[in-house]
Amino acid sequence: MQSISTKDNISVRIKKDRIFLGLVVLLSVVTVSPIVLIIFKLIAKGYKQLSFGFLVEKMPDTMQAMTAVTNNELIPGGIANAILGTLLMVVLASVIAIPVGIISGVYLYENQGKWMANLTRSVSDILQGVPSIVLGLISYIWVVKHVTHGFSALAGSVSLAIMMLPMIVRSTEETLKMIPQTLKEAGLALGIPYWRVLFGILIPTGFSGLMTGILLAVSRVIGETAPLMLTALGSSVINANIAKPTSAIPLVIWEFYNDPNMVDLIWSSSLLLMIMVLAFNLTAKQIAASRK
Amino acid sequence: MNTNILEIKDPILSIQDLSVAYDKNVAVKSVSVGIKKNNVTAIMGPSGCGKSTLLRALNRMHELYENITTTGSVLLNDEDIFKMSPIKLRRKTGMVFQRPNPFPTMSIYDNVIAGYKLNGISQKKQERDEIVERSLRDVALWDEVKDSLTKKGTFLSGGQQQRLCIARALAFNPEIILLDEPTSALDPVATSKIEDLLIKLKESYTIIMVTHNMSQAARISDYSLFMYLGELVEYGKTKNMFTNPQDRRTEEYLTGKFG
Image 1 (cartoon, rainbow over the protein chains, first blue to last red):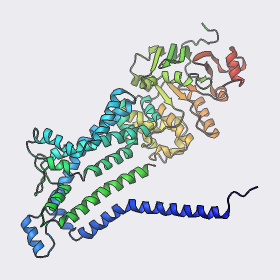
Image 2: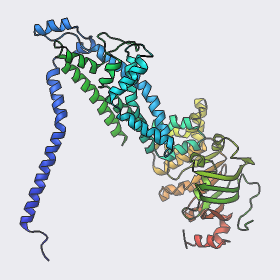
Image 3: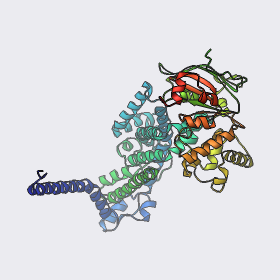
Image 4: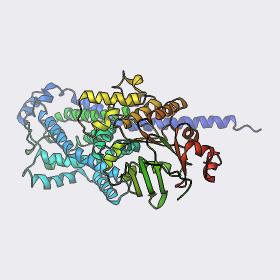
């Protein structure tokens, strides 16, 4: 029998194999490096400003910042107004988007293949592709002009909620689809009305899936800037009134960028935002993994 | 009238001219049969003969799916099941599925009491405890799980899970228990436990069971239905049917010529 390959042939193949392996490693490094570089840069430039005061004090005014910069000191104050504004708007957006999104997801799950459901699903997918600044504009027209008659946290929340909606709708539908049909049948076979089967059996069973979707949606909108510029506007004071202009972390980053005296604060603010996004993302991953 | 179909006097459940169709595909063709109280009735037949479809018509499970149409009537204690509310009907008919399906987020205790809890029926804790204990004793699971009632139902073995599902169906004290191949996912030991259990349970309940295991039907059922291609071919006492089948198709199925 003829030997399958000569010695030379094998060494060529080993070389090819090594080159390919090298290429895979190189491209993986290229993929990973942006996030590593970003985090490295943010930590290197932002850690000095990051302190307890940064989290609990409100934004400094330009004069305070200028004095500190000319004296070569750390800029006083923090971004508590922005942190609280972000939390306020994200919580409010979730309160709006979660019930609507889950109910729509249930509707899609229960009406597979029907034209109304298919249309709803397509529209929801299109909504996911709408540029966020357009959503900001819509919320400006709906809420800023007609409801709160001025820039407001509510308007910001509405634009964020619209962004969250398609993600929650889709994750709800996908999660419910993964629950065995017989579980629903078993509930109904006990004479339990549908809505109690839904809230008592299906949603608790798919809870981790729904939670993952919600957390990913939150981590997506928490860094949104464009729609908030048109709706929440920003504010240098701590505000808990949803009808008043409100600050948010991405908004103060933009403000700091435009103010030469405060430009140093963009790093610590970005670092904080990044930490929050990562926390939501990793928690979502953790929940998704624990499900399996 | 088909002479191969035994007539039952005073049936608890009387199925009359029942047909079920998936879209235009008729899966059960005008079946008329009476079910005797406090007996085990087995529905046999090769795959796709419509036996599960027939069973699931009895607690109106088909109404969950819009492409399925059911015609004919079914009387439970002389009351038309298609005229009562499905919720009332389903409390009178417990159902057990092919694969054990305890509610995964609930403890063993909560699984048994789920029918009451999720129906929003308020009870004293003592009443609940009694129902849980009675139901679990009924399925001979009480001694095995009485110290771990707060554990998740899904931690039990397959056979225990299936008995838990039977207990869940018994909690409402139904008149009829519908079982859809309840042992097809279980090992022989767990299967024989469930079979013993069903023989014991028929003292207080009427049992209708789908099975494609002929020897199981022979072991535990009092009456047997043989279905073929959606048609009820033969119905009679199990003993008679196995020793002296009337229809050629029944005989060929029972002797293993097809199925």
